[in-house]
Amino acid sequence: MFKKFSSEEVSAQNQVKASVQRKIRQSIADEYPGLEPVLDDLLPKKSPLIVVKCQNHLNLVVVNNVPLFFNIRDGPYMPTLRLLHQYPNIMKKLQVDRGAIKFVLAGANIMCPGLTSPGGVLDDEVEAETPVAIMAEGKQHALAIGFTKISAKDIRKINKGIGVDNMHYLNDGLWKMEHLD
Amino acid sequence: MADKPQPVRLLYCAVCSLPAEYCEFGPDFEKCKPWLIKNAPEIYPNLLQEANEKEAEKVSERLQSVGISAGGADEAAQPSQPGETSSSKKEEVKRLPGGKIKKKEKLEVVIEKVVRNRRKCITVVKGLELFGIKLTDASKKLGKKFATGASVVKGPTEKDQIDVQGDIAYDVVEFITETWPEVIESSSSLVLLSYASMLHFLYSLVFSFIAQRTIKFGMTSV
Ligand SMILES: [Zn+2]
Image 1 (cartoon, rainbow over the protein chains, first blue to last red):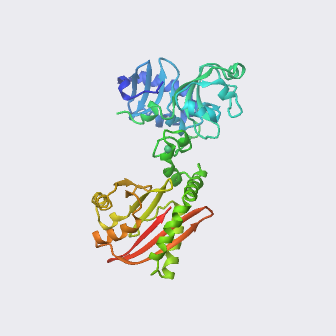
Image 2 (tube, rainbow over the protein chains, first blue to last red; image 1 turned 30 degrees about the horizontal axis):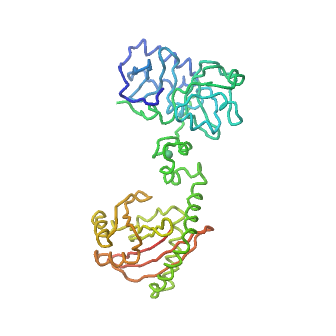
Image 3 (cartoon, rainbow over the protein chains, first blue to last red; image 1 turned 90 degrees about the horizontal axis):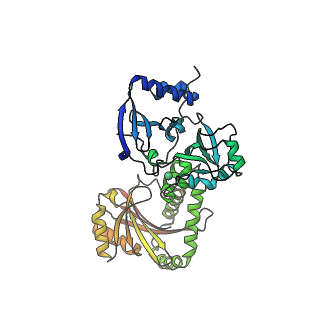
């Protein structure tokens, strides 16, 4: 999604009103309870919360020029990788084997066999249409943010085709957009 | 409310911006390597070793040509003083495994011969800027004098150096002392070293110079 993303794709940039800000805050807190204690630091009530609307119905939540979350249409908010690296345990994790790393970093969606092979790890609790952190065999840090197409159990059972959509990965356009001016 | 989790501060590569452990999958791992050796050696323990092994391979490939130059250089080494030789030998050995980094304080001009595919080589001149010599000027003069290509390039430790095409290591010393009299030769010595457990021949010609300060010339073929 962010493969060719750049600031040129921003179509509107708005400071949202307080009620919307509360709503965004609430849905982030619901989705990532682990973040709740630091939510006041991340999204200070006093600093303006900017929602940047981009092409393809993509929204970025930006505070102090730093993109922190994104979502599509009214979908769940997902953290940027830079934020996830700071709070690595806020999301459920799936792990791909080492062979899949280079494909994921090229923007490919995550195929089931990459998760079910000996190098992969599947968390059976993960349901379909859930934001997940994509980890990799032998690595400590997430390399992508995914959105599951089917549940982890189905990934194991079906074991072919795309299991998780690759939403955001290391070195894509959003990664390179450390600051938004 | 639960305890506040502290944000993890992750080491991102200064070259490719990825977490250091992902450099190997980044756009240009080769470019990241010098930074990684310096800042994240624990993540890639093989890097340093790999670098040394590569060197060793290159060296064994060109053993013959080194042998030839060693013969020629021996004569030039006649006036060397044994005491001095061994002390400079020690310095060279210590410096190299650390990645040839700590040269900043030392006021010396280092001339390095880098051999590529047996016969072709490049002479690298480092440290002229320490004497207030403009590198762009110097590279032009060197190119003109030896009728070859010479350019100022960024060295591995982000310092500028001059790369000259061809082997001019022996003549360049004379040329430098004549062109820039502030660099004065006082004595010279030749050292042939083998380094670490590698097939690593450090072939080094060390000249010492005294201007108002003590100055050294080293020639290494690594
Ligand atoms: Zn790197």
